Image 1 (tube, rainbow, N blue to C red):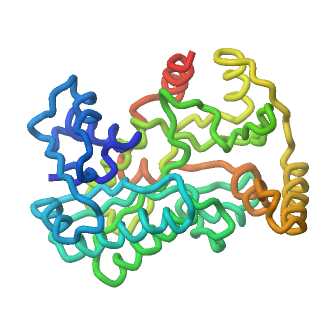
Image 2 (cartoon, rainbow, N blue to C red):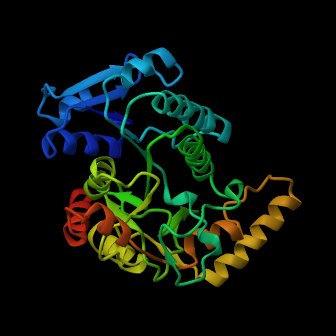
Amino acid sequence: MILVTGGAGYLGKEVVRLLVSQYNQNVRCLIRPGASDQVFRELFDGELPESLELFHTSFNDLDALRDAVSGVDIVLHLAASVTGSVPAQVANTVVGSGNLFAVCADSTISRFVLCSSFGVIGATEVAKNGIIDETIPMDRHPELRDPYSFTKQMQEELAWEFYNEKGLPLVVVRPGVIFGPPFSILSSRIGLSLFGLFLHLGGRNQIPLTYKTNCADLIIKAGLVAGVEGEVFCAVDDDLPKSNYLLARYKKEISSVRSVRIPYLVLRQLAKLNVWYSNLTKGHLPTVFTPYKVDAMWKGHSFSNRKAKELLQWSPIVTMQDALQRCYGNIK
């Protein structure tokens, strides 16, 4: 039995679908009290398969969590808040996860997989053109990043505490930019829409994409492959495209958006000016850019998936060419 949290989310639905349809696993999906089962029926042509069990509870109900974990072999923890203030995200993601960590540490599960984020990686301190992989330490100043990255780092740090102190059989997966229909390919690593323009910030940078099916498969393998407790895996696909290619293709196939290219060095100076003026006006102008965020997101790095290939025997199910075609074709 595999317990999945966040199964109704974008990535979670793909994990549930693969577990049932491709891996033939028994799945218990943790969902909120009162939540509809419609999203799961849509995955399986209107009918819930016998191998899929929906378990309604909140992360604040410890007794219900113990019941949910009872009889479970593997936990795939994907649930997390992606919007809201820092306190709200910490309450929903970190506190709730802590309850689940505690229950699982006292259970008989053999594996706990945490879906973390690239946002926890200390990319700011990696040189331009350097490689981002599992050897890069976690960000030393997560408070300087966005609320989601800050919260995910707190969540992962707490998970490692339970691994070291309570014996939680932890494996961490850090996805890059998860993409696929129906969402736009223009992620923040490519640029931002401001003032009626698309600010192209990614230049010729490689973009750490992972197609939803490939990322879901890596998470499942992190749960099933023996002997990888205590390991971290970066989830990125093969043949990663560059930012300028993705934007050019978007303009050609989807919409001829008006864009302005802002080189990295110029962007970094603008970020310094943004911070200075925000401080001068006591926050009346928010800090959209900071030098720290610019270095983490747009300095220009390469990304490796070698560890997942070697230890998990994972490889992308969907090629980058096919994944991009599905994405552009769906939007068009």
